[in-house]
Length: 387
Image 1 (cartoon, rainbow, N blue to C red):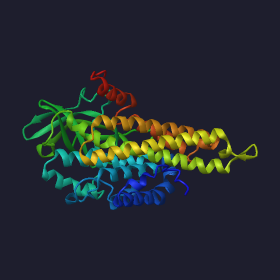
Image 2 (cartoon, rainbow, N blue to C red):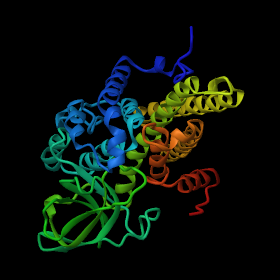
Image 3 (cartoon, rainbow, N blue to C red):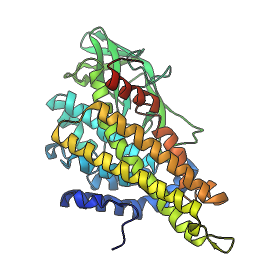
Image 4 (cartoon, rainbow, N blue to C red):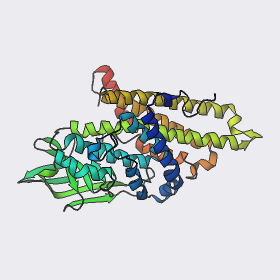
């Protein structure tokens, strides 16, 4: 039997029936609802908000959280497959789901009170309340301990001052999970849209993640009630715990982008005739595509084991760093190579390779740059912190 060119090691056979059903459902959504519109949305610099309700109806928001909060209660591998299939459509769609699920709903669930969970999570799962995550600041995101945003206690409230940068969903958001320095260490606050002094400014002129909303957030004496402080965590372990959850999804997502590029170029090179034969009949093209398939296969095996570790409760942050580093580099290299094989046609958004390549410039940067993750592994190997 012929092998599946996008699953050469039959990794799908290692999935449970539920995991396969999740993958098929999200793949169908991507094929039918995302792919027909995403090229135009990228051209226009527009996030397709019309898809949010459908994403919510499929149970993709907070999919790993318990059903009592209106969520699907899926395992980690299923969440990874969701990210993979959404990013096969576009990194911007996966980013929306990652931020809502891992960076906003997860901290409310993990660090919030039961009252806070019941107040926000069901509406967030239903797509009625959109969140954003305020950690990165304008002076640099790789050193979150050097945080300038601060919150000071004033009676029954907190007064928040500072700014955040490169915030996905910022201008869409009804709430922001904001991390700030306090006299008692870094703490998290749920800042609501409309609170006086809280503003969001969309970042324009992007050449990457154009089908996604990216913003700067500003806090000018924003009064936040104590009821909106996340009570169950203090220090950097709070935001870093959220980032580990989000990075885990990102280890899967770029595989989808790489598969999309390879699938496109396989079809194109069979049809494009140069020097009286298809480009796919040349040794150089076949070697390049074989190399892509090799790297995709290795990435697929890597994330499946990572997902099994996550579901067993033994996953370590350094393992996530290794997978994020490897898979983002794999995907961006494949997208660029596919753009080349498409020739001049590859620079237009009628084909997906250039769009994925541009998006992956952000994906390889956010949630820890490639260099940061290399240094995480270096520290793990040597026991020496070289940051």
